[in-house]
Length: 47
Image (cartoon, rainbow, N blue to C red; front, side, top):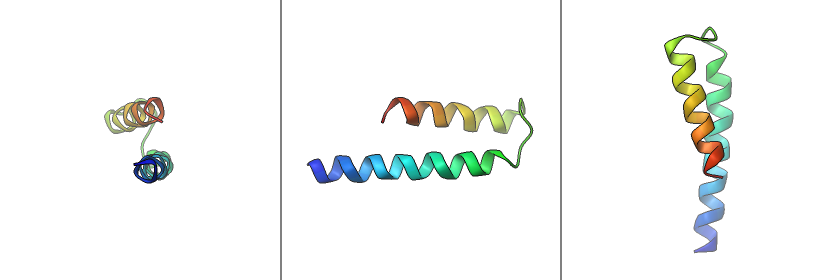
């Protein structure tokens, strides 16, 4: 069970990193940027 939690945390951290890099393709305030920002915030809260 502990192994699964570690894997899930690592997956979330990787997703956050990927989303941050992807966000650079959009202007701040755009719909896509806002969606990605909310997704990142939600993942960070779940860590």
